[in-house]
Image (cartoon, rainbow, N blue to C red; front, side):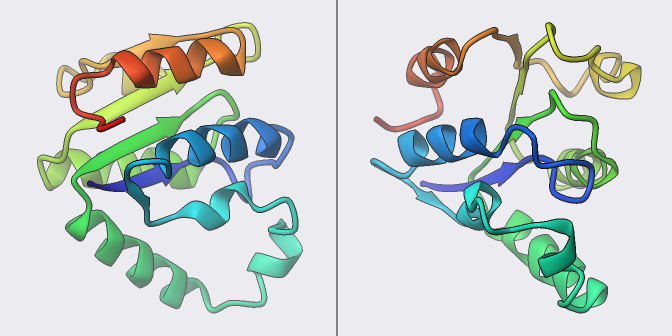
Length: 139
């Protein structure tokens, strides 16, 4: 299964270690197309060296070929919101993981009927358990 993992880059990298643990779990029996999201060396500065149009077009192509989108939304990100809207447009299944102790989930996401699989967690182990029990993920 191909998975598109969405999480904050330019909106902040404070949760990168969580992203990496989630990606490592997902990569065990699946292919995470966006595994660079968990790279500790990926930063706003390093990403800005790549043309924005290239990044957007590459990511849209990955969204088109993915089987599932997993979005970590605890750190608010315009890019993740855009990706979720595009996933909805493509009718891709979406799993949203949100640590409610860090922030409040956007009303635009929480209030969208399409996003039915929204899960709150407090520890990365809880998030991995959610993914283990999600019916659409092979593990």
